[in-house]
Image (cartoon, rainbow, N blue to C red; front, side, top):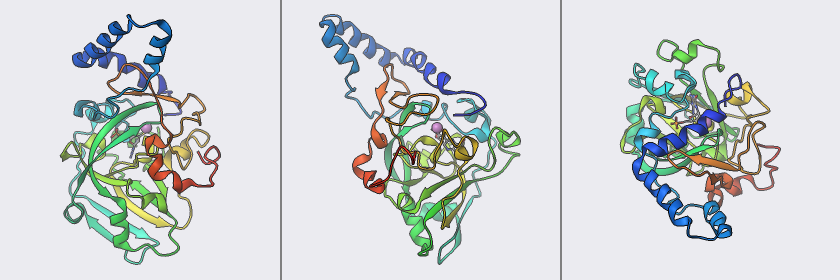
Length: 305
Ligand SMILES: Nc1nc2c(c(=O)[nH]1)N[C@H]1C(S)=C(S)[C@@H](COP(=O)(O)O)O[C@H]1N2
Ligand SMILES: [Mo]
């Protein structure tokens, strides 16, 4: 999704190699292909296009922690796991202020004690047309927001990533404006699917995945799920967001997963699930439409991409 260096191709090309290396997966694909040889051609084409049944098998920990987007640590998928080792996720505080009755700075330990993490296995769909299934550990963002009591003027929530160029080499470059910022409409932020994440597979969140606390908003493209958050501000007007500032025609504020609205440089109709061979259809709202579509009633999702 970088504008100065197109990343859409490499993101999808890596997968066949990974499948080949994952022997079990390879046998399954190869076996399926052999069995298909006995099936008439017309039916065969259909079977190949049919959605897979093992739909949401969690992506291996290894892939979730080595295939990352975190430009603060570089723009390559393996840069974050290589470069995030000297980042310090403790001590850590999150300041929540703006249009609230009770602005506060929370220590991360207090956050983790007050709102124990539950496991949420979420589909994660990057705008680059790859996806994963991630067993996050987290809690609803709504709980933290309720604690500070938003005023009637609060309509949006603005998030900011930590700015530490000495620990985050990417911040010494101008590949993006720093610090990384994101935003949600208040009703989106209050939705129970929107969570603050502090762990992964029951372990502390690795630095490359946004330690010590990041957002997960599973019905939106991955870049909305901002990492290493230090500030959450309730505001009256739509806040600026990093990718929208970088390339406004490519990345909108809403960024709901939508197979009907192509990215200007590639289709969003299908996606490559990391570890799988065949591409699968992308689902509206990443498959969470039954829970979130009502947030957008009456909105033109083509204009508000
Ligand atoms: N601060 C910050 N947050 C970020 C990013 C980033 O570069 N910086 N990348 C985003 C993108 S494009 C994606 S797809 C997800 C990737 O999360 P993951 O590496 O844990 O899969 O993080 C998002 N959050
Ligand atoms: Mo992404």
